[in-house]
Length: 469
Image 1 (cartoon, one colour):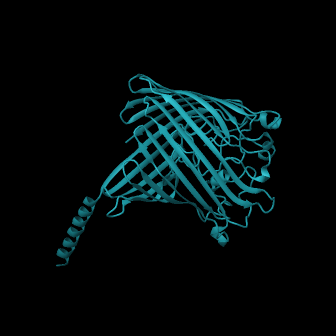
Image 2: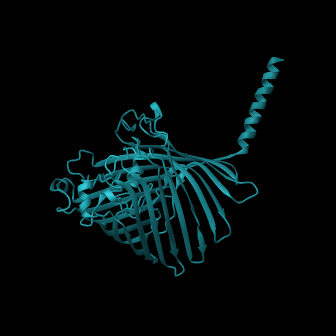
Image 3: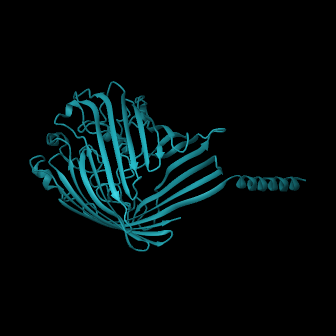
């Protein structure tokens, strides 16, 4: 009898498992990336390797219950540098870099058309000029709740609440003294689309706990550098909470196709009160306008991109005139900014365009051979920050920016890129990226030792292979 009961229970479990497996549809997608790259180091005497061989695997698993409900997990394995023990690339290949990048649920509120996404997810503000937003782009991977609704085919609304930082102070785990260490973002976008024209105004606010930027955590430190004025110390205590607000709009005109024009405007202001020990006013506010005009031909699309961003004045103690950001990003070029295909060197001049102005001429979608396309770009960039700020920033590479350069009005850079993409198979793509940046720092702005320590002429060549599935 015991045996029969056991068999019946086993059969029930099998049938139950079979029923459960039929209740959801599981789909996997992702990509393997391989990069072989040579790039000069901007800092002379830097002992970092110029050549890198790196790989990464990203896998997305969609668990679909219905058209109204699904869960998504996005895993990232790597970056693994070939030969490097820390990343698992040494002989033995025991990699330990496995990350949960996204983990969220998409669902529709019953009896409505309101879509909800909650969990760890990519979050970005709109931009029609180069595809990324200089206030928050990249996208910013963060914990958030996002609601979206389309009123009709012309008007929609998306609202969000995100929590980029909480409990990251260096002493939280021990004493729990940092009880005001939360950074919250909330905002909305209003996408509007008509024949040949679309525009999306947006707004974002921030509530910044007085201890939320004083941390040893690298990610939160990144946010601190983009919110604070140059020269401010994020670890110093403040007596009050801070707040921030951003607003902007992006528009695109395609009514005269094949001619396309797009314009993006951003404004932001953050007030973190006053640094108690130095008296520095921890305010930062500024703006950025960016535009593109291009004309699509049969074999290429020539165009020009231009932008201008406000920069710091000569007094660091009255706050900053650079626009604050939260993981702002620009993908205009593959070397100077964040538009690369590879896994290693990019963002040479910075993640975004804040504190600079520039003009970029380009010809993209150049194609004379099936399955092969090219893009050629050449740009001239200059800083909009006062030369007097060099005495505060001290070093243009560090300069209270997580990476890239702090350029003054006396400094400029010239960039040239030629990138080629070739589709070997439907799922296998090879990309070659060639880049050159000439950097000119003004000697009467920076000290001779600083100027002499930074390389003027910088080169990059990368071969990338991507298998998508």
